[in-house]
Image (cartoon, rainbow, N blue to C red):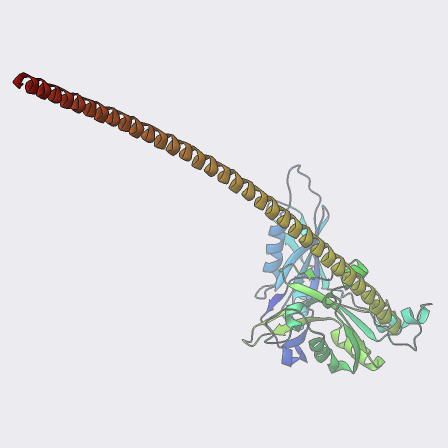
Length: 385
């Protein structure tokens, strides 16, 4: 889907759901083809940009809302132009269709053909004939008859609950928007189902060229009249959002009737069963993951315990080694102190022995002196006699 474009003229917009700022605006597009002359001089070419500028000048005071090239060949350039409202389309066609463009440097003129854009939208004959001719459809059953609209390119932000702080679309908002046309039996927004992508192999998160997230949806009406009224209202329309500030933007959406039994009871039941299987599988995966996580945690706990035991053993060995070292140190210190003590004792003993010898010598000398005195005294006494 194309990106949302700014809308300056909202006079032709019709209400869809004003409570959510949603309106429908007529698609005001045209297809413009410019036939190119045969180039006679080699190396010379026609500028697409110059042709586009000439087309813009041909509509005089009016302006295109958008003008883009859809195809460019050697024979023609095809443009797709859009204007602000439906009333301008005829005026633009009158200015362009059948006219010619003269480019500088080229003698041949370029013929312009313009026509209103042909909208790709299913008709009542399309869905009536499809369901009538389909062999696998039972038109008495919901979802197997023309009662479901398939919408693509809906901007998520426009269908999000207000003040929800989220840009995710809501089924409740979708119902409120489209119940205008009739009583709704069921709706489905595939992107809201977390299992749908795995069930279908499709990606339901799509982006527009502007970078905004779009979604697809299915809306099923209880009555055929509601389906008809909705398809009629959406034919030839684009979706417009008008903000609280009064500024409006619009985008093209793709609308078709569902031909896949998407909201038939059988399809809904089938998706429920597939979802249940996927939920069970996811539960099994979660359980397996939980067991693996527990096993990893146990293994890590055992590894931590083993490391702690190894660390404790290393610590014990370090302490034992330290204890032995300290014991040896104490023993060496004891031996040194013992030797020192023995040496001191030996020295003391030696000193004592020397002192004893000295005392004995003194005693011996004293005894000898005493004997000498006695002897002298004896001699003196004898001499006197």
